[in-house]
Image (cartoon, rainbow, N blue to C red; front, side, top):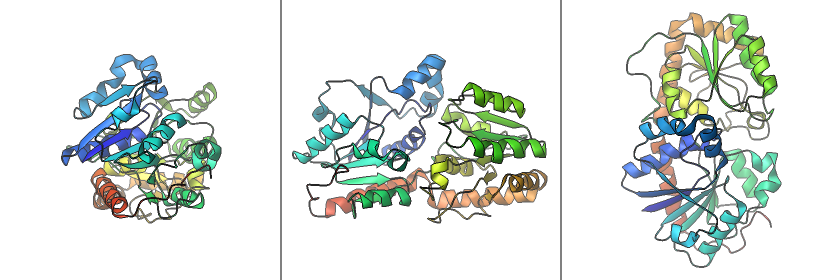
Length: 374
């Protein structure tokens, strides 16, 4: 099967979490013998920011760890029909321009002999719905949504029966425990500051509990404004800057535990979507503690795979328990790994994608009026 994926960027993970999952699932499909082609637009903001901050060396970790992957850049005026020629399936990510999304839909509606899917891995459907509803999806066969609550938004927009839940997952070819355990110390948090979506939560569930327990804290990420950096300094945090995601396993391997602080939309309006950091941390065998979010789909076993904390005070208590109890750490690691390996690898998601494509191919032709603008 030939699968074409239009991404914002495959090469850059600078403030672009979808690249993590995409890299893993595409190379899983390649390993199974499928022909995979990834396209990304020239001037993608993620890649531009990465190169501006770090130059070509910023791509070294990606190139070293994913030698079997590559993407082709395309510019304005590119003949999109030539890019999808011979494809059996085409997937378009929601960070692409509306014009590109619409044009590929027109190619499908005009008789393109490929299954066409729109892939949504963000909260904009609820935080900025008009930005998503501006996409013309009338030529698309279906939508891939990275959580059930997001899929329900699309159902309300008229996509009943043609929206499919496709969670992110861990690329266990790269994200796994270290082959040899070394010394671990302190906490680590890998995450971007964002747009004020979780400022209070970061302070309440990460910064303050770390200081209360006396555990050192390393933070990696981008888009930390001056006031955020000042806050980290007040709490005595070591801010490390951008981390290539391919290096995350080695960083996890040097720390005692990590913390998940969901963005507000994933703990309120779109509950049940953990985002990829949870999958990656558990796959790396590091104890995980989490601020509140509702695992409404039963993806994990809270209390076994990771520990919830309902308040900053409870987070401090749980951090102290994890730091002082080696048996608790071993139990969390073993349980988290078991769940990831049984249910949440990129291999599982490749299976799911192929099953979705088979389901669509077996159905009658899609109605002609499926659109978010209806």
